[in-house]
Picture 1 (tube, rainbow over the protein chains, first blue to last red):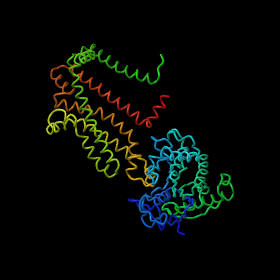
Picture 2: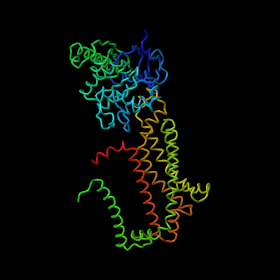
Picture 3: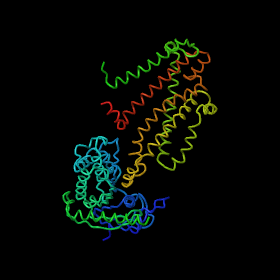
Picture 4: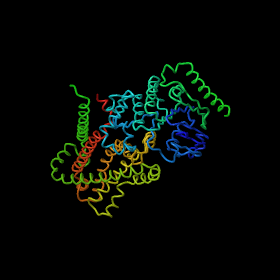
Length: 266
Length: 259
């Protein structure tokens, strides 16, 4: 079976720059997978997300999603970033409902259903992430962790088949982050979208990912692909188990090695 | 005496105006300044009240000209601002041109308008229009151009068109910028109108002041200035009020400060 997302010998050089952001990368991601991409800063992790969503074009090679070559911006792909970017003039519920205003077929029915079915849907999702009763609040009344939960809801409200997460938990404190891991896991297990998570937190990658791609420093290259087969749902307890710690340690050493070679080369 | 912070702020505003007039009056008396040079405020107010029936038509003329010119200027400003704010290329191309236009002293364009349209209301409207366009263009364009790139990515990955992004994100987030510029533009619009009325008109406060100064009726000149100041403050207050209603979400800090 062909993979849902395929990168075939993809490299990317940003226009006007000599720097190769991504070098000859191959990836095959199955439908419903939760893939974590880890690596040091500037290794082209975020570039992969932009390529998959069609926001930028590969310099060489092919990117395809659902057996179709990506030629322009995708439709209906959910995205969340480190910065929750909530719109301050809307309530949290209205912010979460934003994709319904844009993506078909919801867009069509938005005016008719925004006060009934869509609002209930947003509330249900907010409840799942622990924000029940916060729908009428404004973004500035919520903490960073709460905004990030809302941002996840916004990425998922239209039940996308593909969800792209760019260090969504990067700016949060350790406790909030671990809590959101568990929420993210259950959101994924509910709808089984295909998820690509970019992170530099190795524990996060091991906790959430079914498969981990390790990237080297610039130019980004895949160093190692690692399937993670701990049972689901994973718990915080499991992250202290010896197998888990060993995996984190192994990945950490890989990054250290790749950095070492870079230093020697320079 | 106990006052809420808001009431105290109002009280102090009024007191500062009263204090200014008092000092002015005292300075005039203490140094025996001639009425031809600087009339006392009491005298100006007396003239203002006595001549009010004669001044009113001129005041309404100036107010009318200013609001029409301002409205046209804001409309043009929003359109130009949206165009150059939504495209990096248009922004880079049009900006030097705009700065060039805005650097032209507006007093220099009045004679051109008079040649084109004759003396009277039309050049006054046009002058107040061109003078109020620039701040609106700059602010609207800035508001649009500074949309968070991440938010744009989120929307584009959903399949949003440029128009979707403009409508759902660009324009709403530009509102505070727009209102800030309206408050600058409305006072500038008065400057434009009076400028044109002074040069080429037979009605309006600018014209009254021109004639009064020719007759050495300095108190009347100052009465004209007072009227302009009052009109300016009134329109400014109206826009501040609308701003509070429309962009309350951007004003939360002052709300907190009041609590």
